[in-house]
Image (tube, rainbow, N blue to C red):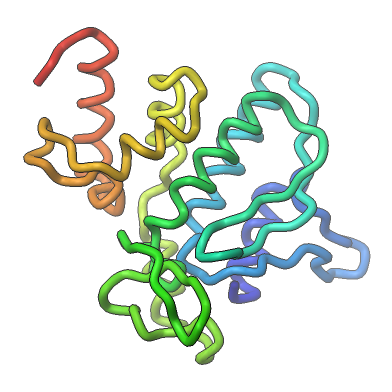
Length: 203
């Protein structure tokens, strides 16, 4: 991940990611592509909000990396809720392009398993800084509310929530919910659907 995005996450969640403020240098490094910035940001937002609201144990990240095309979030301490959020993020990551954050799938790229959208199917994260993508990523609406609502609906079953978000939904004209999450309008559609399902309304 580009250093600017890496630093932004450390600034937003200093209790989760260790930063040596006296030296002005970061101690934490994200070993993945920029495309997962929004997913990691939403994950930390939900976990830190739970800590501050419910007084649960402070969650501390040890390592965040890509492995076999998916996100791996290693941590110590943390609550059952934090573990559920991590489970959701890890199961969602194989459907999120590691380059741009768009909807994607795991492909074999030069002998390595990577998650890519059709546009970046042949792009590696080692091809140099993709600065234009960084600007676009910062414009993507935060996903915390959406992921939190999905996780709550599935009673903190991260795997079930991820499965629902990555399968075509009849109530959304058979569109995959996660594919709509890149816009405010799309997120509103998904949140409305979750609210209807919570009240037993079948659209």
